[in-house]
Amino acid sequence: MMEGYKQKKYPVVTKRYVQWLELESDEEAIREYRKLHSEGVQWKEIRDGIRQVGILEMEIYIFGNRLVMIVDASEDFDWDKSMAELATLPRQAEWEEVVGKFQKCGKGATSDEKWHMMERIFYLYD
Image (tube, rainbow, N blue to C red; front, side, top):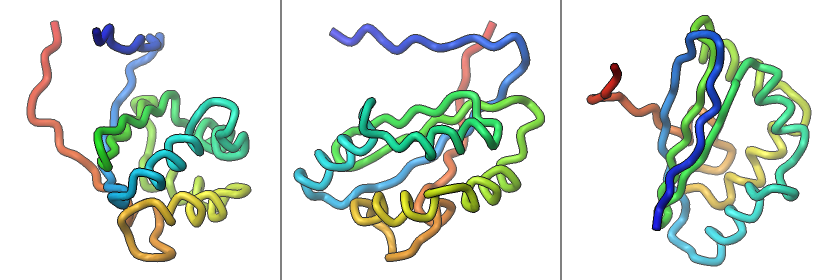
């Protein structure tokens, strides 16, 4: 039974970005990709860099070989500026090279070239 995922609440207005990416259709590669993102295996420098550029929360969901990433940030967050900064931080290029082997993209593709921003078409708020 699916019980859902807890969300953290912030005392400020936040905004959300949602992106998708396709992995190679290889069960062993997908297992390895999942392992790289698991607690205790994730690279500390990558987590630190994500926080450093102002991302409050980041989640990645998987279905088959498709990923969806949800990013929550403050209302004044500048995606392009923050992603450009993130790309320069310690081990980020190395991380992109490691995970790029599993992703359906060209060798050396940047994060912006791999992940595709999604458009929200519906929401339900109070």
